Image (cartoon, rainbow, N blue to C red; front, side, top):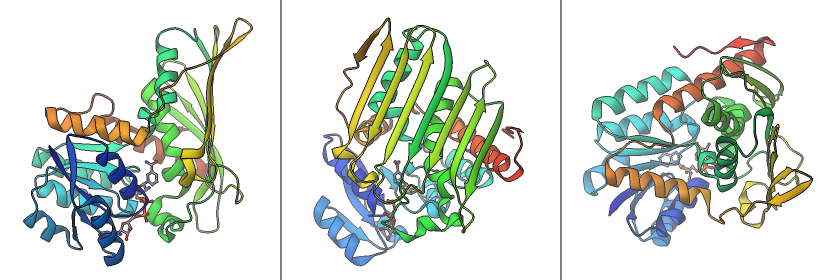
Length: 335
Ligand SMILES: NC(=O)c1ccc[n+]([C@@H]2O[C@H](COP(=O)([O-])OP(=O)(O)OC[C@H]3O[C@@H](n4cnc5c(N)ncnc54)[C@H](O)[C@@H]3O)[C@@H](O)[C@H]2O)c1
């Protein structure tokens, strides 16, 4: 049984708690939440202990994994604390805001000899798993064009998202998902170009990016975190091959809070026919955490996402930020 301590009982802390509840080899034993009321309610809901103080929790509880669901600007502090306490770590995405910050985290993780898994969840999203299969088994033929999008209202459940120095704005908080998936498929982009619009707080919440990969693949990725109120949370992925076209469109009822009621369809077009793909009805967060719990149980790094890949994606995002600021093509630095 893998014993988990969830840090932060907010939107993602809740999502993770539900996912662990459905596993027979994991158990949430503690929650660290600074808000007494929220922490108390979480402890009752998931039958675990509530702490406000991380050190106290680690001293008193037998824990294998610390699962960090805190606002992004706090990830570095808690990843380092967890590593120093000798715990394996799951950290929500974006792992942190700057490459230097990630390097400090990775140094501590390495020194402690623990695993760090980062929740870049699109790699586990059933339709994206299917898309990868169609690309890699030759169903699509040679890829000619690629478009992905993620369109959302601004998260309304917590005020810290509004502060770009805390969340990274739409570029890090939302766009990163599709940049991550493109890197998962095609490797490390060589050059990037992005156009967009900053909001009044300096957040790049409207971004259209082009990623140029060394193998000649070019992808267009759009991310908008300022859709008008009422616009459904939307994901799109279209891969046009010389044999078939894969297209996935998902529209949720109300922003991200209502993914359960979403309309989703993944289709293959070709030879004058449309084939609706039978995609497994499974929750991606559940699949992701199940994978990580199994990796920890077996004492292995994740074969789906490595810390090197997490770093490459963050380097790509920083290059996109530079491209947005300077309105030019930028060569991605992985130093
Ligand atoms: N993978 C995804 O699809 C996805 C979706 C949404 C959010 N996220 C990410 O998950 C992370 C958490 O986001 P969220 O929406 O759950 O945030 P949230 O604001 O809903 O929850 C954060 C919780 O942390 C608590 N907290 C803050 N500081 C604390 C501290 N020092 N010690 C203990 N508790 C503290 C807050 O009281 C709050 O309950 C962010 O990095 C966000 O970007 C990922």
